[in-house]
Length: 250
Ligand code: BTN
Image (cartoon, rainbow, N blue to C red; front, side, top):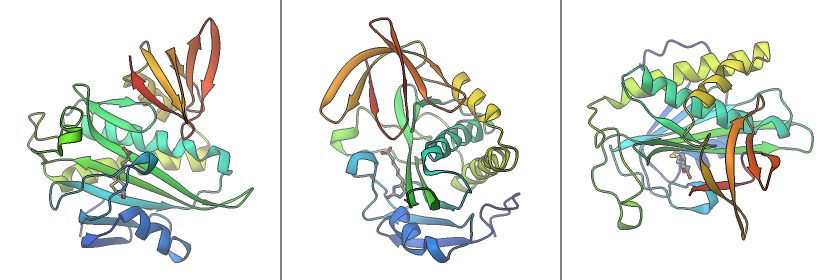
């Protein structure tokens, strides 16, 4: 029905008119779901962002979806899946003529405003992964945002692009599958990392790093082959792993 040019992702698509959160539903069914199952909803009533934040998901305004993955990797390798998601969003959009950047690790921005966010959640035991749910939210047609995010958020339409949600979805999913299979089958992260580096909103910038209550300043200098962010603070180099920290502009 979606005419996806894929072998793994979206062979099973669960389409809902309304749902609490596609991530919550994906986690509920993950155990018995086939790898690559996609849950997508026109609206979410309890859309979630990172750090327990609310994610605005109005009916028909965007792409609210979750992908269930079952990679044979260690739990500590899971953050790389977020890099794949970011790279596939940026590169999927680029194929449709939309330029965007990744604000490491999980925000996609256009003109310094957030257009899309990724929420990766893990079902894991100490040394093995049972499933990974990759949630992606993208504001496509949204014009009015809630007061508290008005200054920070944008949509594909607000940035001047009239694209169909289905075309964006297809483009992202196909790119995701390509990068995911490279990683899983060939253990090759290079293409994904290249996209993350070339389309980074933070490399070369001064940022604030937020870790729990702690807030400190540093300069971002690179993204490693593993997808970690390299920062320099007082001449000391450090690597940050996605999932552990959050960053803010200078
Ligand atoms: C963030 O930027 O904090 C992450 C936002 C992730 C939103 C998506 S929308 C589909 C999926 N279901 C959810 O409840 N959240 C993710």
